[in-house]
Image (tube, one colour):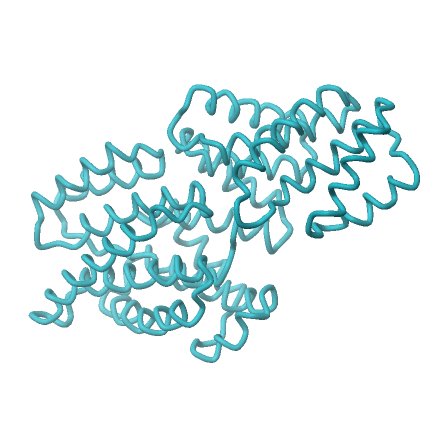
Length: 378
C-alpha cells in the first residue's frame, strides 16, 4: 500500500449533523454500507439523503467517499481519480454557497475542509506534492474553526489525532516530505494516539476510521502487531465483507507468526475472489496466493509453495504495469528457493537470474547471488 504524506488524513470530516432521526439513519447506514463495500446500496442511501436534505453537503460528500473506497481497494488504479475530484469540487461549491450566507455554518466548514483534505490526500498518493501541500494548508484552518464552533464533538479528535501522529512520524519516514512541514504546526505522537483512541471508542460516525488508522499505524510505524490486531479484529467483526480489513488481519497474523490463522484468512480471501465478491479482485488474489505460498514454504511443502508463488507471479505480471511490486520480486526469489529445495537447480538458477534483473527489494539481490553460488536448502 502506498503511504505518502498521510497526515492529510486529518481532514476527514467531523460531523455536526442535525438532530433528525431520518437523517441520522440514512447517514449511519450509508457509512456502514461503504465500509462493507456495498457501493450500490450506499449510493442509494446517499442519493436519498440528497433528495430529502438537498441543502446539506453530507449526501454529496459521502457519494465521493464511495469513489474513495474504490480507489483504496487498488490505489494503483487511477480510473476513479477524475470522478472523485469532480465530486469533491461539487461538495466545495455547495459549502461555499452555504458559507456566503452563514460563515459560521459548522456543517459547511466540516465538509469543505474534508473535501479539500481528501483532494490533498489523493494528490499526495499521486505524488503531486506541492498541490497536496496547498490543500493541506488551505483545509487545516477551516477544520480548526469548525472544531472551535463545536468543541463537544468527539469525532473531531480523529483529524487532530491523525495530524499530531503523522506530523511527528512521517517526516522521518519520508525525507521528501520534511521541507513541506514548514507549512504546518509540529506534531505530538503521544497526543495523537490518545486522540485517535478517544474517537475509536467514543466517536459516533468517525470511530471506524479511527480504528482503521490505529491498526495501520501500530503495524507500520510502531511495530506493534499485537496492538494492531486489537483494531483489526474489531473492524473485521463489524465489516466482514471489507477486503482491506481482512487482508490487514492476514498481514498482522503473518507478522505475529500465527501461521494457521493467516492461512485461514488468505484461503478465505481466495475463495471470495473465486466468488467475485465486491472488492475481491486481482489485487486481493495476488496477495492471497503469495501468503499461501509463504505458508507452504514455512512448513517445507515446496511443491505446494511453488504452485501459489507461480499464481502470485502471474497476477503480478498482469498488475505491475509501471512499477515492479514486492510481491513479484519475492515470488521470483522464492520460486528459485523452492525449486532448489526439490532439486530443480536449472529452474532455480533461472529465477535467481531474474531477480538480478529486477529492482532491489529488501535483500533480494544479495540472496539471489548467495543462492546462485550455493543452492538453497530447507
